[in-house]
Length: 419
Ligand SMILES: Cc1cc2nc3c(=O)[nH]c(=O)nc-3n(C[C@H](O)[C@H](O)[C@H](O)COP(=O)(O)OP(=O)(O)OC[C@H]3O[C@@H](n4cnc5c(N)ncnc54)[C@H](O)[C@@H]3O)c2cc1C
Image 1 (cartoon, rainbow, N blue to C red):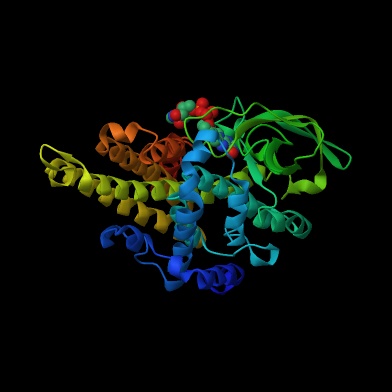
Image 2 (cartoon, helix red, strand yellow):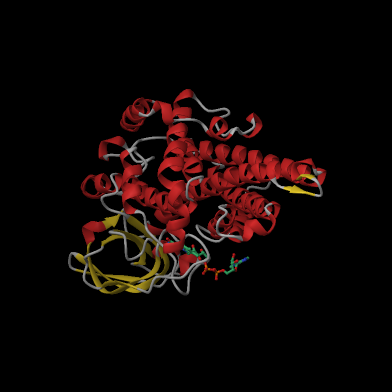
């Protein structure tokens, strides 16, 4: 899928592949996975190369640390910078500002593979990519040149700030104000649940410059050292522990007008455009977790003996495993179709992204949870990775628009287009 515009990413990816070819296996080869669930199926040779590289990075740079990052709540900055050296800091950002210029499908393939090594870290990288893309797409030349190169290398990290204490699902009711005074906006308000909050450098803040509703919202970039910007306590979470989550507080925070992305009143549209891709990305992280968990479950069934034989001989468990594999592949097919629709700006793209987010994050959570069940009591122990996959992907059903909000978007589209 990646065409000529992808050169900067391809160059970095290819040189890496050349150096470490002997280390690279696709998941099917590495873990002896059955071909019917091979995530390389249907991909171009180039995409298979990206995928191999991402699986390799996940296996060698992330997976060995994922339990420790979770336990000690470590934000693995240096590992993410290594990922950025491979082009993963700006996967779908244009090459002229340092991005890899790859497609949405390529991006999904990469996030799926990275997530097998650590969902939480990959999910933060996906949010960072979304913010980077928003600046690349809606920023002017100065803004793109100022912010994107350092975001692509992950010398700087970004956060997406939409949710407020009083506006979650009803995001367009947000109350953070931005009053124009000369050549600055004065921001007041607070944002809740901000991924990376306090540890990141660039905050993309949706704020109200006009009247009520989505048309009164603008989007500004707030830099970390801006006076008036502060952060709440680090939240204690069920999963996603390798990335901090904090409130972002804005008190008479002076932000230059030159930091506004797009025109006044376009902020909500910019926020939603970012989230369409975000939903594909976050669903890809769930898919990677489910892919890993199907293999973990399969491996466990093959070795664990009860009632005098391995669990793999039990037909109930065989059928469960077959259902998990079927739902895994169905999830992947829908997700990749949605990624294509978004890449091609098709009229069904928003609905398909919502369908993919709803279906994939729900089904993949069920797959991981079933994999935990197949491990019995061992699945509940932190020595076994399956519990971390379950904890880490649970939140994907809640954020970037809850799965109830996904149903609202899909239903609205169906009903508004009916005869
Ligand atoms: C770990 C974590 C990280 C996050 N990171 C970010 C981030 O980086 N940036 C950011 O902006 N936000 C972030 N969020 C916030 C997230 O997007 C919101 O939590 C989410 O949008 C839901 O909003 P809420 O929590 O206020 O729930 P509410 O909107 O209060 O919803 C509560 C429940 O009611 C349901 N509901 C609400 N309205 C309806 C309706 N009309 N019909 C049916 N059901 C309905 C919801 O689906 C949900 O199940 C993060 C959240 C978490 C937990």
